[in-house]
Length: 457
Image (cartoon, rainbow, N blue to C red; front, side):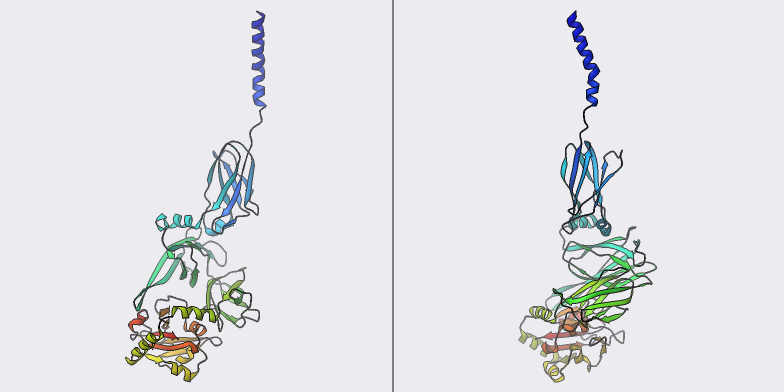
């Protein structure tokens, strides 16, 4: 009897105290930490705002800011399922959103990695996985209004370039064009663009447009380019011109914008262009003894200084000599054979020695059908009489390579560029052909404006 009462008493005590013991147990807390990384640059993404939301969305988002190392940390988390993402101006610039990661928390997680998608992933997402192994790039970016800075939707982005098919003794040009429309956020993406070289780009809307600008592409699967649509306003463009690979300034260089102002650099290589039409423009930089440089600049309020590096004339001549390292005797014979045919006009070594020109274009001044006009300083422009126009830009060749193809606009070279690149003392001969007279060896120049071919020793 007493033993039964004792057992009941013990059970009663457990029943009374069991709920109290369960309520006093501490709740488990977990930590979630990791890094935010920019896959395109290879650097941590400092200042990224990392957000964490419970899987069922029952509670508000928690946010932390990544430090200078890209490190972030959340504490006092309970077990469960979460969603993790981040925001950063880098994503806005690219016009993409970072993927959201799902995390199941059973224990501390200290090695979580968040990243801007790689160039390969971005290209595959825009162009499709079938483009993964092709030698092409994705040219992408955002179009903004140069005056307000707002994204421009439904703008037509037009990209074109020339591909030259080289065969035995011939070069056949083919003009390639791509066009896309910007989205609601101003973003555009053009697939299957050459991975390296120069392309021409224009942007048009019903009320405005960007004049054709030259964009230099680098050997990568992704090339990113912000564009600013011109407006009725103007802006200032400042910068400095130096010898490429050094801080030595280039004084008295000519800096200009098509249909805009032109100035010369001071003793420190500095320049200031006022009243430049707002928007994305091509900046043209030339100096005697240097290879000319063409680059795209954004003429907008608050734009950073433009740094331009010019390659020396000597370095460019070395490159030309390597490309032209075939037998001189064979070339002399070919030139003599074409001269005997009586088609076209020839300027020989003897002509050059007798005239003693300062620059190459001086040799063309007395050639019928060829016009040489003076630009800024010593810069001279060359044009010819065309089939359908009084004056037009002829195709240009240097040692058989097309530098400029009339009617194709294939490369940003002019005779003024050849003046800077080639010394008259290094010239073997110059051939000048009117439209309809271009020989097969210069077949790419068979357009409506003739051709000029320069051959060096």
